[in-house]
Image (cartoon, rainbow, N blue to C red; front, side, top):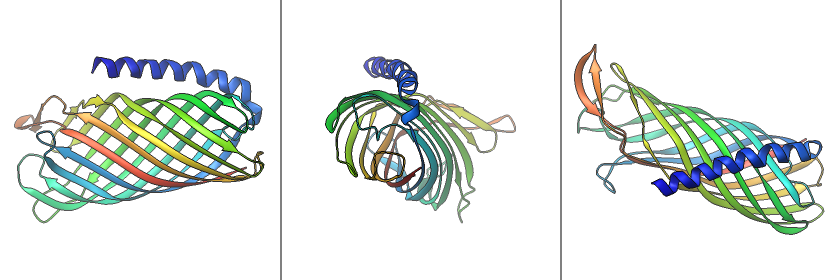
Length: 271
């Protein structure tokens, strides 16, 4: 755990150092792009560890905007800043919040993500990159009523850092890049809006991200990109908190060991 926190601090520091320097050096070469995503989302909870008690899964969509110089034809500082709005409705199979009774229903998500990544590129037509960044993720989950239980809402917020390496190759009208590395939640917070509100702090744990990007068009601002990506979060069980109803104790609740995985495809149109 201490090792993960140390690496996360290094990622945060590197991102804060790399990003302003890269933007300052390459502002004129940046490309603005509008993005649209389709993705498959899975959220799993385990009690005890490795014993799944809840799973949400299904498709999501997203729209966003990005600004980067990753299409630059030369080596040197690189940066990317992006924000997106995502939404979806998934199947929910799990247990009631205050009992061991199974529930089959639907859940809805809406969230906002933002991220800034900076780094350095070694090479021109062919080479590799070192990058780091920091991002935030805020979303609301609405678990719908079922025939056997009452639904509820929960609000999540995560601040995360990442480190990555990449390799790329580019031609006049085509470029390809792979990027991957570890991802570290720095802070995770959850508010369950059920009876009286209760706040939980899931323990962060390291996970992974990866992208494969295909760029078509000129090296300038008129281009189209297709990105295939993998993203994930992991959290260890939070400390238990009292769930109350009008101030009267009802149950003790915690956020169990949790894993989130996302597989997606993005279309980005630069201008």
